[in-house]
Image (cartoon, rainbow, N blue to C red):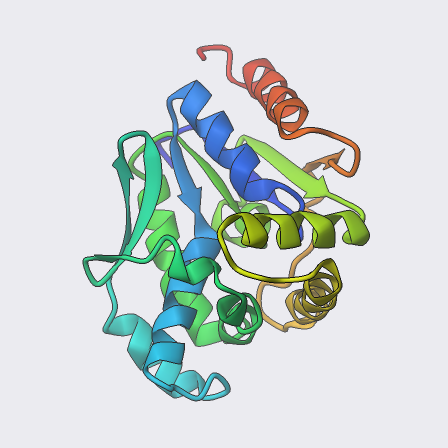
Length: 225
């Protein structure tokens, strides 16, 4: 590993994506949203009506896909086969199915390989479900963001509603409970806190407070930033 790496894990709705994105911007690091890569593949599988229980077909779909990130006017955009998919991968149908796709070991092996290659080239803030435990186990700074599930449901519904997608807090809560179950019980790379991770409970924190805490940890760990 050549670059400085901050690995942020935690359940859906804990504030990982926004926090990681802002920390990366302020430190001048690359922001790597590992979950978005699984979302992009899920979106493609749904568009192509691929059986999400068929690991072999999903593996071939991943091998035939190109997923990459581009910084456009300060915004981190994700591209699938050269088409930007930043918005559609956040739709409820992807929320409801991404854990089904990401549970397959062969799919995870492919995407984790891509993520590790990115980490060899530059300083980055990476976030996901197994970022500290599997993708970057040697990361110098590991953070686990936790949050009350009711608060996570409210945040997810608010996020979708602001994007014009009608989704109730109750529906978001049920979706998160199912995603937590699948993510925590899957055999390959389950969601869990790394033994070296510093836990930050975000239930009563603003995004700015979350960002400040991670940056303070980073400055304590990396003396050169």
